[in-house]
Length: 91
Image (tube, helix red, strand yellow):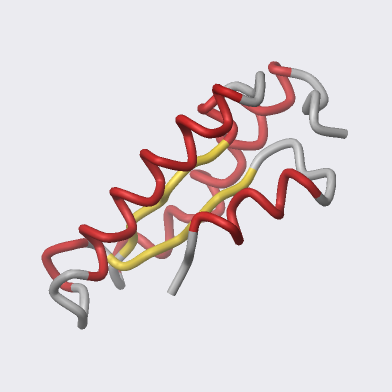
C-alpha cells in the first residue's frame, strides 16, 4: 500500500524523483488497489505542482511478469528525464 504522505516524504527527504512500481490493474490481486493508487498519484502530483515542483517527478510504472525484464530500462529512462529537470527545488 502506498499513500500520498509516503510519496511526498520522498521529496521532503531530498529525492529528485520518485517511482512507484505496482502490478498492472488487470492482474492486481486487489481489485481497488490500482484505482486507489491512480487517484493518490493524481492527488500527489497536484500537491507537487502547488509546492512548485514538476509533477513529472513522480512516476508510476505498472508491471507484470513479462514486463519485469523491461523494468531496468524504464527506470533508466525515468532517471534521465529527472536529470534533465535538474535538482528538486524541495532540497
